[in-house]
Amino acid sequence: MSETATLAYTVALCDFPELPQRERTAAEARYARVLERQLGGPEGVAGSLAAVQCLQDGDEAPEGMDSMATINRWARAAAAARTAGMQGLGESEGAYFEVRMA
Image (cartoon, rainbow, N blue to C red; front, side):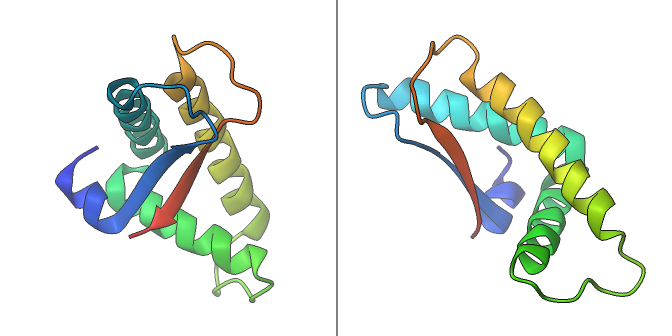
């Protein structure tokens, strides 16, 4: 994850307590890298995350925003990022990546 991304958002792998910190950090970096590639860099991730959170909170979408397209784009990017992030880690029931605005 680039320094700009660190300022814009954070990624945390949750509910995988047995995973060593080094592997956790690498998984989070893989997740962030794919998310950025799918959504147009750190700014794209932050903008998409803000838009999705706004829609989930029931707020009106900004004029010109296609709500379903925004949600679908985020879902596709998050699924691809999860696949990359979990690569080589094996299964851990309930493990997930949390993305938050920094």
